[in-house]
Image 1 (cartoon, protein in one colour):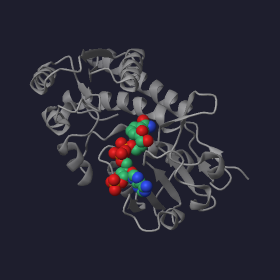
Image 2 (spheres, helix red, strand yellow):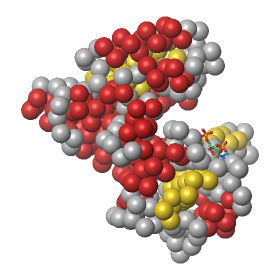
Image 3 (cartoon, protein in one colour):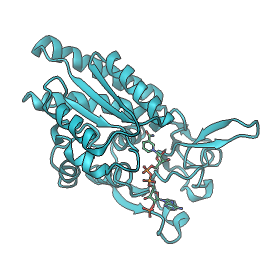
Length: 292
Ligand code: NDP
């Protein structure tokens, strides 16, 4: 039996429809149009594509999109000044600074400058701390997308053995925190984990956020497990082109898992949809409205 393929593209499309409906209500009932500012520093091609897609989908959801493209030589002070201006701008409800930033800029200083109420990426320590202590928070978008996809398969994640491979601040740690909030028993694995295949085999729910193409093999997966593959890795093909693969060896895993996300078309499309949802949440909170 091959695994059920979890359709992130369709789930993201339906989430974007919900967001568009929530935006329409904000406009008609309160006269508010949410605004999302995205800041891109430099010419990184992958980042430029993300920023373009974010802008397009923001507008499609009925919100205002403000794109700030700065050249690679922009100084840290110039970037911090722009963030401060966006913090003070009432038309801007969400601020996202596209990572990675050029090497001469201290990423944590930039994130620390974003108003936590507008931090729709959820990277500010205030939001990380609020998530960790169970307070309402703006939560990183990719981890939220992972949990939504897992819940397509299991309406209740309570009691499941979840293994998260990767402990970054933007994916691994927040996804582990969200799964803990869902009452999973959570193991966080990383590059120093002993016998990673054996740890992965414990998982009813396996989240791969490593950044190593097809590292997780079919025989690392417990039969019937749900696998969420966050990895986006570009590898060369025999024809001299490139293609995207995840952190999981999909062709092997699909024979063992109960359900699995593909790459592309799994977690990837969820990230922007969750970003749009966060922008609506942030706008509602800034205006003293209940969350939707
Ligand atoms: P990071 O490089 O920040 O973190 C990778 C994590 O994987 C680290 O915790 C590292 O461990 C761990 N790791 C690395 N090698 C191994 C190994 N051999 N065995 C076990 N663990 C290992 O990556 P990100 O969290 O930012 O991203 C992870 C992946 O997700 C990437 O492919 C990225 O492209 C993708 N991504 C996808 C998004 C989407 O929208 N779908 C959004 C964000 C990321 P240690 O801490 O010990 O070094």
